[in-house]
Image (cartoon, rainbow, N blue to C red):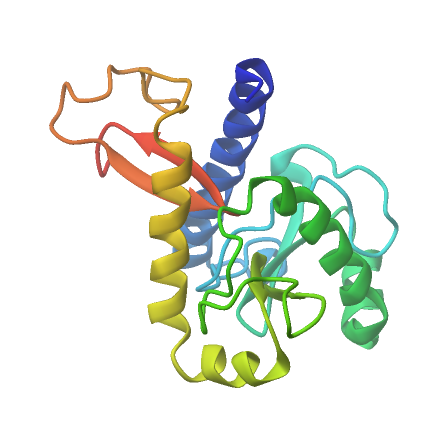
Length: 207
């Protein structure tokens, strides 16, 4: 793996993670109703890791200028209130394009060649894999039947996917320091391994 590219992408994911946590804190403490759309409560899925507005396709502004919403438990980020309103009026018009970008971003790092539910080989007897985006997370399945199984026990299967990501990316992980604090990994106990958008990020501590 190209370690320079890995560092760059890891840094981008950390920025997104910090922004998502910060938005949650602002949402809990900001009593101004005018700011409600900007600082929406954090979803339960992965943060929005794309750098483009889902409606316009334009590059997003700086973190503080972005507008974050929670759409059915999925975080999305926009460059303007106009984009937010257009999206809310017709989410189905824009989500397929967002999913295509998410798949393109995460597919090169997807750790498995088998279905996370059935264990069958992807692209085998069942035909082309199903690339499903679940709350900003790419999950690859072998057939429509596995979609139903995933929906019934999502946490279990995502935990399996997390472990696969860690096992695949741990050996080549390029950093020996925490990308947030700069502290040496292991100096404060075992590192905290976080998986974001099918990428491993290692942190020095819970804080």
